[in-house]
Length: 125
Image (tube, rainbow, N blue to C red; front, side, top):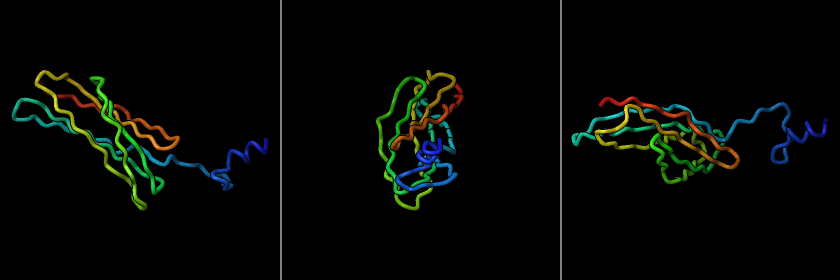
């Protein structure tokens, strides 16, 4: 039992007693806004703040939305000293859009795989 406990507390060859390790990244600060365009379409802008707990760091991310579409996977290289980065996307919809839409952000780095809650917005017709 003692060996298993000691093995569980070893990280990268360093023994750390009683420490709780945070993920290298965390998802916070979600936001969404919409704008009616002159052509009758609606532009929706989604933003998420990715908090950085370890630098330097490279993470990849992609967006998934309520109509089933997925964005391309993009990579972000975080420089030392950076504590957060904004990640955003836009979605332009025609006049016959649904009453509510959402997007989710997926972030991956090493063994950490995070997913935001759906960022929902109700859209006027």
